[in-house]
Length: 204
View (cartoon, rainbow, N blue to C red):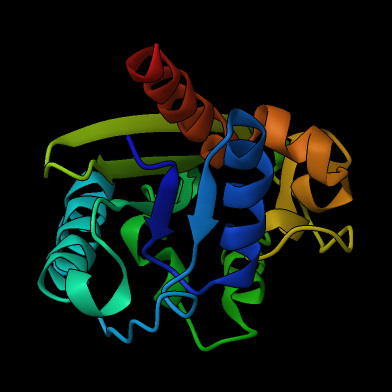
């Protein structure tokens, strides 16, 4: 079993989380840029799982076709699709979290839509679905969720995306946590640990 995993992303925030959680288990995470892969994958799925599968399969096929050029083969691939679901917005932005509004205005858009909604009704969750394809082409799905509320303003300098408005407890956003604290409770952290624990079993 090759311990190198190609992550179907070049998002620096995601890569940092992937590496910090999977590296201690002995897995080396490679970005698409690390592997010289350029891909513009259209997310046409209607669920987080469908989009994760689409991304993982496309990168796996690219790696498989170009294995002689980029490596000796035997790489596994990981892709995730994740997002924010806000109950008062009927689950929005959901799978459209990364393209809910213009860059730089996504959090502001949600805060504006919720401006008259009281705290107790601002319930929300982060959802992550990971598709892992091993070097033999076998697929496995791992999911994670974290419940919280949408705050009334941006708070915190750590994290990325919607972290500064997502409160894991009242007054404390995901962006106010340290990397270690976030990894322990985050949706992606939960899903990745499930993956790592499953891969640990296959190594024994």
